Structures are given as structure tokens and as C-alpha cells.
Length: 256
Image 1: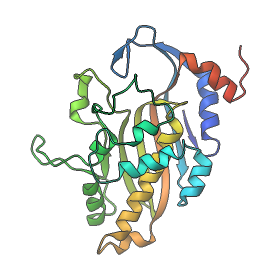
Image 2: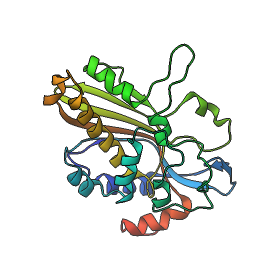
Image 3: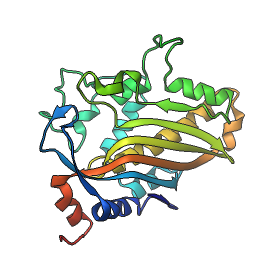
Image 4: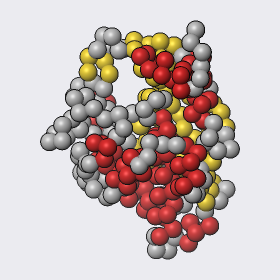
């Protein structure tokens, strides 16, 4: 399913309604790397939408209604320039439960800060890149089709370590028609706990990218470029089976 919006105000309600009406109950053998035969989700596949990104952070926050102040503080942590693990803001996440995740003394299997600012190392043939390399590419070639920023790394393939792997796959920046657009692929998204924050953090990343591009020496091209659309494609949009009554109540759905 794919929809186009003029702003973000109705996206959450529409996604919840579609999920409750058309979702399929799915049972899997694990969640976040943990074996749990009783684990179930109500799921729809291939949920997509496109919406323009307002240049005002305050307006975006009003439209999207992410978990504040956590989402705002965590975005600042994501773009800090350091490959932090575990960082600090995970402890302030509204749904954080210490017994379900790592302790303060341990590292996560991955963090967004590590993926944004991975230290340089050899890949198969060349050095790996980080977020700054995407900035530099767009300065050199503003209309490039190559400005993809991966969050899913080769080490995630097959989840061989048995732990958590990223939900976000990556962000593609594409400048066309005087606007910088973002295409955001995410393999798994919990509507109740993550959806609004994932949307907000993607929008903030595009605004951050545009600001960084405008600050680069010799990049006058970007002075006239404005934020474009966020196109988000979710392979599995879901809620936990036990959360169905919560979502129905929140969106005033009648229980059948």
C-alpha cells in the first residue's frame, strides 16, 4: 500500500487503521535475537508513503508527534560524529526496560552512532565510508544517484551473531527539481513504539544533511535547494499481538 500526503498529521492514524483492519497475525520463532515461541505480531507488508518535509523542526514535531524530548536528544547523539556504543540516550527511551536490553556496562550489537560514524577500515577492496563521505559526494556531484547511506552492514547478513540487527536498512538522498529528497527503507517497524520516531529521525537527517551541504566551502549550489519529500517504505509494519487492544483504544477502534 502506498499513499501520498501533504503533511504528516494523518499518517499515523491511517497506518494504524490499515494495520488493524488488514493486518495478519504472524508467529515467529524469535524477537530481537531472543527465542520466543509465543511471540506474535499483527503485520502488514509493503507499507509506503510519501510526504513533503517541512523545513521547520517545530512544525515537524507538531505534525509527527515523536517521543520528545527523547527523539530530539537522540538525533543529536546520532550526528555527534563519534561511534558511540552504548551512548546515553537509550536510557531515556520511553519504552526502555533494562532487563530486555544491554546493561550500562555492556555494548549493544549495534548503534546508529556506530553506523553513522564507523571508523575507516578495509572492505573487500576499498575503505569503508561514513556519513561525512555522503556529504562530500553530494558536494562533488549534487545530482548523483549514488548518495546512499547504509545502516545495514555485511556483518548483519544472516544475523550470525544471534543478536539484534538494524531495523533501518538505509537512507538514499536524491536532489531533483531544486529539492533534496530522501528514500528510507526499513525492514521492520513497530507502529506503537517506533513509527513516529523513525519518521521524525529520518526528516531530521535530511535537514541536517542540507544544512551541512550549505556550509561546505565551494558548494553554492546548495544555497537554493530546499527540503523535498520523505518516501518511506516499510517491509513489515506491525504491532505486538498483545498491543492490539492498546492500539484499538488509542485510535478509538471498536473491538470485534
